[in-house]
Every structure is written in structure tokens, then in C-alpha cells.
Length: 352
Image 1 (cartoon, rainbow, N blue to C red):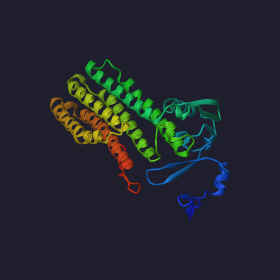
Image 2: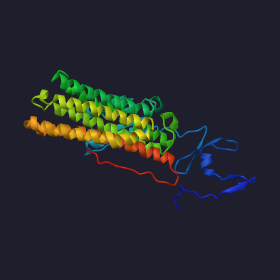
Image 3: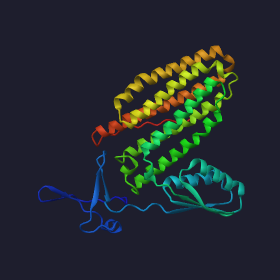
Image 4: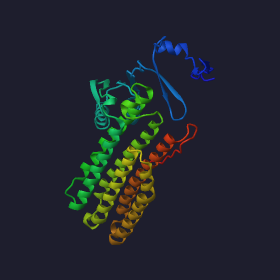
């Protein structure tokens, strides 16, 4: 039997009260004694989560990464990201040899991609990172809203660039994708910290453990929406005559912005009816509109057809990630309304 699984027989006392004993070793570890209070959380899958009312697991204090000879820069960066997401407060990176360019590259990525990380110490062989931000300062729901706001502002500037034929710097639009990446990674850190019980799920804006997966999926969908919005901005720069495609792409930008805004609103308000309507009507209409735009521009500017296809493809991917958010909304509501033994339908989408 798994060492983490313990079988207890249910006892009946007083004719109406069921009692189950808790393991002595666990009680001693958690400083639980006679008269101590514990919190029982009834989960939607039928399980019960038991935690001490006055003690939480300690945050993960410190981690060390030793950069061995032959380790790629990418693998070191992934280790740092992993420690950040896991919830460590301090990350110590030890270098086996001096590499100024590598340390500069690490600092650049840390600054651009990670919220609340400060470099407390640095020399030729060591870098100490301290995560100063508190996860409860920004609930996950606020992170989702901020990620959407950044994407919408990027799409608004793409529209402005199409209207002004180049007066808006598209490179500025794409640089804001770093903000979305920061929020995405910070949101995942919050979810992991909540799962470990370092803070309560309520403090980060969730109600039940089974919501964690759904929020993680929406975080990822919004992160990918940011990526494809960036791709649109970069690809627009390849058009030789932006004015000839502007009118159609402006309309497509407006409709796409409204769709993803409505999709996240349905998720945040748990509006299953709106989610179904958006999937059955709005998503279909937007997909058809994308096809119409591509056919029209293929005829009007055949010399730009390859670039236009790439741009329309990114709009299509934004639409699809919006539908992922809507499907997650339906799954989440179905789980909350179903019997504990029912399994919610899960969906995955390949990342492009």
C-alpha cells in the first residue's frame, strides 16, 4: 500500500456522529493536540481536505542551482523558472566558471519575465535571487483580467497602426508580450502555492481545489493569445502596402477583440449560457468572417497572399484560444453542478 495512504474504519458515537481518527505522526508534525481546531473542506469530487486551522506549510525557503560545465543557457533558465513556479523565496545560482555574457542574459530574462524577483547578490561565480512579492497581493482573477487588458491594448494599437499606415510602432506592441508572460508565470506560481496550502485558495480568489486546473488552462490560453497578437504585429511589418488591407483587418481586429473579451467575461461570471451562445453563434460567425476576409484579400492583393495568410492564421488561433476559455467555463460549471462521482470532460489543444 502507498505509504501516503492510510485506511481508517469509520466509528459511530452517540448514535448519530461519525468519527475517523487521524494519524498520530501527522498530528504531531502539525502540532495538533486535544482541543485543536482543524478545517474540513468538502471538495466537489467527494473528497475531504483536512488542514490545521492555525498552521500552514512553510513557504519553500531556498533552492540552489549549480551550473555545471556543458549545461546550456536554456537549461539553466528553465531551472530558474521551475524554482520560481514551485514557490521558492530565494534562488541561488552558482556558476562553475566566469561567464559575464551568460549572467547578463539571465538578468535580462529575469527582468522581463518574472514578477517580484530582485538580485540581492552577484559576483563572478554566484547570483542570488530573492522573490519579494506576496502571492496574495494579486488574486488570480485580477491576473486574468490584466492579461486580457494587455492583449486588448495590443490589438487596439494594431488597429491604430492599420488606420495610420505605419505611424504606430508595431515593435512597441510586440514588446508588451513580456508583460503577459510575467503575469502568466506569476499566476502559475500562485496556483502552486495555493495547492500546497501555503496560503488558502480563497486568498488567491479561488473557492475549491478543482478550480486550479481550469484557471491554469485559462492562464495558458491568454498567454497564447498574447503570443499570436505579437505575431500579428510583427507580420504586419512585412506588408508592402498596409493601406490596401487595412479596412478588412481593422474589422477583423474589432470582432476578435470583442470575442475574447466576452469569452473571459463568461468565465469570470461562470455564465454557462453565454459561453454556449458564444460558441454556437459568435465563434462560427467570426470564423466565417475570417474566411471571407482572406478570400477577398487574396483576390485584391495577390502579391501579399502569403503574408495575409499568416496574419489571418494568427487571428484564427486567437479565436480558438477564446473558444478554449469558453469550453473551460462550461467544464467548470458542469463540475460544480454534477454529482461528486461524475467526471468532467477535459480538453487539450496542441500549442502552435
